[in-house]
Image (cartoon, rainbow, N blue to C red; front, side, top):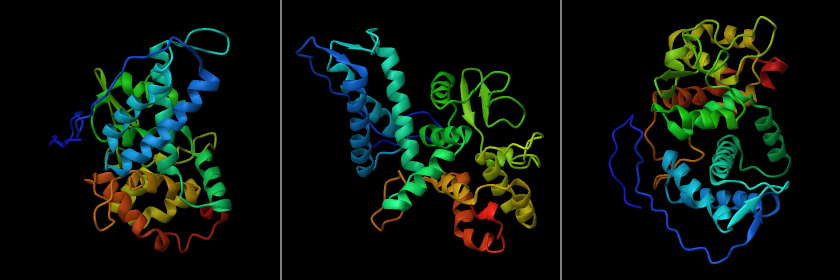
Length: 295
């Protein structure tokens, strides 16, 4: 996999990826539920392990894993749903993209712990709101680039959030994403964090998405550190979930490791801010003894 230099902020891949195909030798019909989907999950899990170990990350990792996932479908001349309808290639590709997104998210938010600790971590992951899930996955997929609206919208729909529309994430001056023509770019804490209402409870008392809380916290950490504890007392986030999301955004879970064990990747400004937050995490919450805050 030959490396090539890429300008920061472009949508170009950082590696040359080759997809190798061979002629199918049979005309069998496969069942999506019992044959194709189980293979798809297995292939994606195995390929992520292999590619991450080889130092592939970001968009390169996603594209290479998508290509591998096609194997479960293309081994059959026809793939059918349980009702007998044919699953066309475009529909299957959407399923592959969603499956890759879910696997990546699970690894970003997941844990290497075993037993009860792993189960507890799994419950925390399951409880993370969909908007935050979308942002964490989108950051890993697209970084800071302005990506194709269709691509980002497909990811959003697959994760259960509305990107565009009256209540979409691109709406309002402080939306989580910014749409320009046919592209979308996720907005970081520097673009959103100065909004004093970001991360606070809604008028009906509903909790804000964790990503809103985190981005406001990152901004306060730099600009108004004396306001941090007051903000946390007002917003009542689940602290362990908040830390888990921060760790996911830091990006170390699926980043290649250097020879000394450190993460070998260029850090964004948001990742640098998250690194600083995590470094002082214990000290920040020493005085926060509320059950709500400590989860």
